Amino acid sequence: MFPNLLQATNEYWRKLNELEAAYKRGDVSLEEVDATVKVLMADLKQERREALAFVFNGLGSLWYQQREVVIGLGLIGMLTYTWIVVS
Image 1: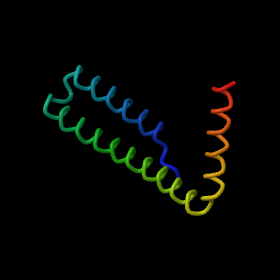
Image 2: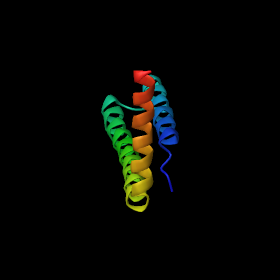
Image 3: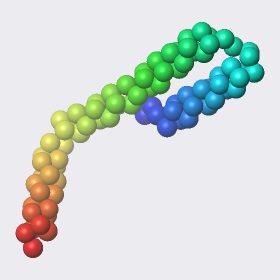
């Protein structure tokens, strides 16, 4: 299943906004804000790593299963680009 990076980023910003509001109300100290931000950043970083790993694993799988198709599409793309530029 693909990690939903957009949802994770939105959740990260929502939690940051809640944390900022709590800090402005005086509910949390600056040290708690720093600690919470570090945890939130680590969570988002993990989600980004999972998304990148998913993409790279998918590309690797595509390469090993459909190598000829990928090479053929690449060559067609290069020939088309060359034809457009030269024309």
